[in-house]
Length: 126
Image 1 (cartoon, rainbow, N blue to C red):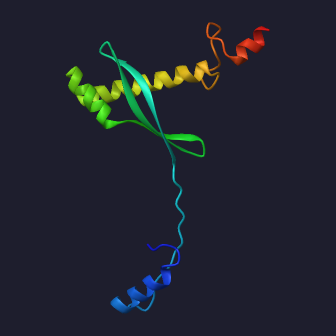
Image 2: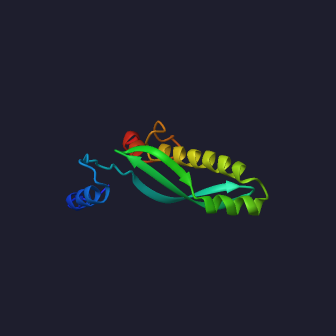
Image 3: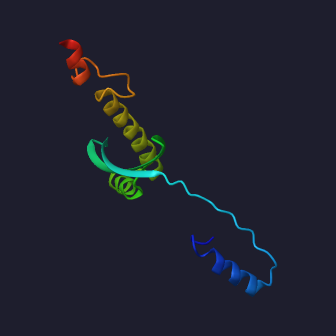
């Protein structure tokens, strides 16, 4: 692979150094996911831990969501439980937290429950 504008130089070097009579050239483009980080409060073992979560999206669709390894490892040591159990439980709690936030905001969770006012409920109740 070569950066744009470097192809001719690289082709010349390949041909001179290897003696090849031809080089195939293909152009590629790279699509990169949008990455965001947020801190999610997770309750575990009677304590609330701040967990850093990395989220990746492409065209607005979630493709990956991953809690920070160092945060999981620290909880596992502190609570004295295996890392894989912490990882599983934290991922579950993060999903629940995000679903609850979406519900409160009137998002994918099916709207805001009546006991939690938001702009949609306030407009409906007027």
